[in-house]
Length: 409
Ligand code: PMP
Image 1 (cartoon, rainbow, N blue to C red):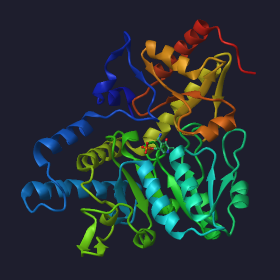
Image 2 (image 1 turned 180 degrees about the vertical axis):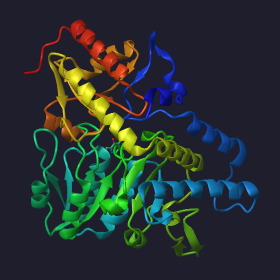
Image 3 (image 1 turned 30 degrees about the vertical axis):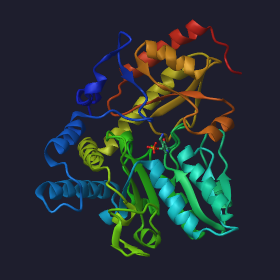
Image 4 (image 1 turned 60 degrees about the vertical axis):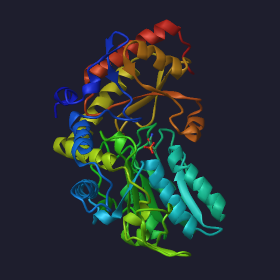
């Protein structure tokens, strides 16, 4: 895999920001889009655009084929048994809310437990808080180890016979922790619970097989894997999806509508009320083609190497604190530079053309656990190189000199 050759496929990366060549290190927030994805969306709007599932005319059937073809690609990409188990959503947030509103609220009773962790993104936390409040269920947390990992012993101890749902990220967007999902799924199932996996940060970076992991629900966001914003997917086991009531009602999702009652379409369409994100799905399909051509294992290997290199380079900067495990992690490094506010760090880096994230990363409970109000985060993707990490490290040294920071003790 040649990241420099791949970078040439991304038009946006070839520009100067504040007089410096752009170094884009905010991939955990959203990735950039290759020419093939941009072209697929353009071609769709220039040649095929029509509404799906309804039109008997040629454009209508082409648009439907493109949309349903993208669903097939997502199913194959995740190794889902069938494409009817893939629901198109706006992203991971919507997908998790569908499960929390559809499955959790419809099945949980007072005294039931939902188990999550404090490393969850707000999208995999607030829907469960709300479901717990609505049903009388209790929310429980698997404790975090000092390096931001969890142990299987703690999973065994936290998940009980009362637990009905375990909801957890495959990869943390702050710590980079990769959770042992297959083993957690085994524990959850043995105790009679289902497992819901937030795949926002894993799907773009490593090979995912929902059958091998034996997860009940799994989510992804297209924009974090070279696809457009506004499109994502929810995978679910067939029986669970069959038993769930739709969340949104209206056009596209119905079978028969009477004056006082209605029936729903079969899977997956009963969950896709209204006109869907057709061009988004087409773009996501093109993104999957692009990623598959490179190979997810190659992407993962590249990011592991780059992250190890970044950890080495950044650790050498006096007073810089890196959070999260040193091994078994996805391609991001979350850090603080002494007592300099991360927003100031990110602002100075921007003057050097380097884009990093600063803030709470939609994980406020995790910030409290880290005992900080915010952090900076550099996150990598297939087009980043060691040169990008060098630019980051050099600019961080300049930032430190600029602020004359006090190291956090
Ligand atoms: N979970 C994790 C771990 C994430 O990193 C994100 C995005 N930052 C989300 C959920 C939410 O994804 P989206 O905004 O695409 O719905």
